[in-house]
Amino acid sequence: MLPTAAPLIATDVHRTYHLAGHDLPVLRGVNLEVKAGEKVFLCGQSGAGKTTLLYVLGGLEQPTSGDVMVHGRSLYRAAAAERARTRNEVMGFVFQHYFLLPELTALENVLLPAMIGGKKAESRARELLDTVGLSQRLNHLPTELSGGEQQRVAIARSLINDPGIIYADEPTGNLDASTGSGVIDMLMKVVNEAQKTLIVVTHDRELATRGDRRLILKDGRLEEG
Ligand SMILES: Nc1ncnc2c1ncn2[C@@H]1O[C@H](COP(=O)(O)OP(=O)(O)OP(=O)(O)O)[C@@H](O)[C@H]1O
Ligand SMILES: [Mg+2]
Image (cartoon, rainbow, N blue to C red; front, side, top):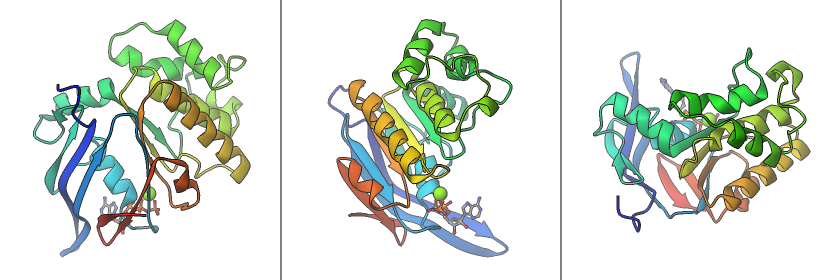
């Protein structure tokens, strides 16, 4: 890997869904280059294809054509097992619905991606939960946490493997405005401190001004916004 290479490069990405005999072209030639440490917010109307694009950029959704390079690794010229390894090693994810495992405590949820990679990381998990203000909630189950607290657990979890890039899809979509704003503050703080690259999807154009760059997905392509 060249240290100077951009951590995220998408080249002429297309994604068409095929439904009941007709084609729905959602991504129609997306090109994107994100610099190390850059915070990019992607916005656009409901149905514009933001989640589809984030999933393609995150190795979760095969594009119809085009490719994505993450830290010098091709996502879609690689086999599925290699793509899964890249996801676990260099990417972290935060989703609107948190996706915490209900039977695991906050601490265990944060530890899970490290355990998948065969690493022991308990002291790091405790540190991360402390950073997001949850050192008093280590042994709480998700049902015993508020929405904002669950999302902060998810932020801590996204960082456990020290990934280069964090992807977030509507991370505040389930939260009231003030809790959501606090969660974004927290996300920006931990990402800045750890010098991570951040890609956030939001339909909220105001929220999208909080990064270094705002891009709008429209008619299947990205525009500077
Ligand atoms: N698996 C699928 N099969 C068929 N069509 C799909 C599929 N997933 C998404 N779509 C369609 O692709 C379009 C883009 O969906 P996507 O979820 O990416 O939009 P979005 O910009 O994230 O919207 P929102 O802001 O509402 O979350 C939508 O019209 C949707 O109906
Ligand atoms: Mg979406």
